Every structure is written in C-alpha cells, then in structure tokens.
Length: 319
Image (cartoon, rainbow, N blue to C red; front, top):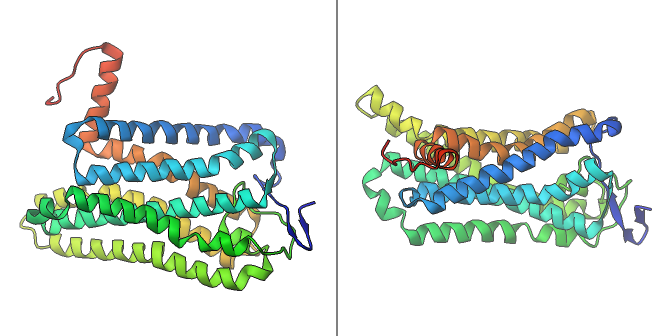
C-alpha cells in the first residue's frame, strides 16, 4: 500500500516504462557513467590538490565543481541502481524527501560554482591587472562557504513543507529518483504552498545564476571586441570554451526537464525519462573530461601521471 488517508507511506519509483525485462542491460551504461563520474572527478581533484602549479582560483573552482558533481551523482546512485539491479521500486517517504532535497541542493551548489567560474573568467579577461588582488584565498573560501550554505538553506523549507502532506493521486513517480516537481504533483495539499516557494527558490538561485552568467559573457565579448588582434581575441575566448560547454551541458537539460514537468503533463513518458537521466547523469561524468582534455595544464599533468604509472619514468613538467 503506497498511501493512506492519514498520510503516505512510500513512493513508487519508475525506471524506464515498458523495458522492465531489459533493466539488467540498461543498468550497464548507468554503471559505466557512475564509475566514470567517480574516477574522472576524483582524478581531477587529486591532480589539482597534488600539483602546486595548479593552486589557482580557476582550479580551486574546478575542484569545487568536481565535488558538487560527485555529491550529485551519489544522491541519485542508490535508487537508480536499486531499480535497475534489484527492481526495488518502493521508497519510504522520508528517504524520498531527503533524496529530493540533496539532489536539488547539490544542483544549486553546482550552479553557484558555475557562476563563480564565470566571474573568474570575467575578471581574468576584463580586469587582468587586478585578478590576483581580487581572487584572494579569503575570497575563494568565502565563495565556497556561500555556495554550500546557499544550497543547503534555501532548499530546506521544501521537504519540511512536503513532509506533512497527504497524497491525492497514485504515488507513482516518473523517474528512478525523487524530484520536486514530480513529488509535488502527487501531493495536492502542498501544491500551492511549495509551488510558490519552489519558484522563488529556483529564480533566486539557478535563475539568477544563469542571468549573471549570461551578463558576464556579454561583458566579456564586449571587452574582447576591443582587443587589438584576432590572436588576442581568440586566446581570450579560448579560455572560456570549457566553461561555456559545461554551462550549456548543465542548464539546457535542466530547463528542458523543468518545462516538461510543469507544462508537459500529456507528453509520453519516453520524453520525461531520458531528459531526467540526461540532466543528472551526463554532466557529472562529462565535466571533468571536458576540462581534462581542453585545459592544457591539467591535461599535461594527467598525461605525466599516466606515463609515470606505466613506465615508472619521471616526466619533466616542462616538456
């Protein structure tokens, strides 16, 4: 029994409707993505922490992004693998609300980190002479604390408001993890209150972050247009390529998923489900790869580590 008149006991998770007999095989790419996420992000953090030449503000923010990616992946891992491995479909209401809170909190932290990285690029290109005086260790620490606090505090009222709600529909979710729009549509008594606050929370976090990131790149493009040569312009813009790719990889699926949840109630499940998995599984796995390949100092250190492990020969950092 999933719900009663006095409250609800558990939610029912959904993997991929109609493909239950293929869950074992479907789980293989999911396992690969989780393993890749852990390995790639841990490698990135290790490289940054162990190399003195990478102790810069940009790389500090990159380490923060890797941590947020790891936490976001671990928040979806238990239920995704539970559904596809063990066909464990029921999730207690408290566990569902905790997972929902963690997923959205870590998403806000990742969005905040992307904004900090955009500010880093803005200062580096538009005001390079003051870069070192602006991005001090104290400022970076404060940005990190604000990023974590913002994600944890602003999202906390949502699971609290939902915890005392009663269901008005079958407690069947749309995914193998708990998302706020998905949970709220099943709890009519909390819909108005939490919907208003959730809109405020989204607009004041990821919505504001997206606008500020766009503004930063408008100012960057304006500054780059005043550079003397095409070579200087390309070098300046090239330092932003990785960040732009990661921003698009994070925001585009998220915006699409939000629109589908709010206005696409009559769309088939085979549109809802892939978009959710795309948003929460791909970026954490691809972000470190994008930076590892496109950021020359990190790419060089990774190659050196691989050569050292395979040949046992110390590779010069000046090659």
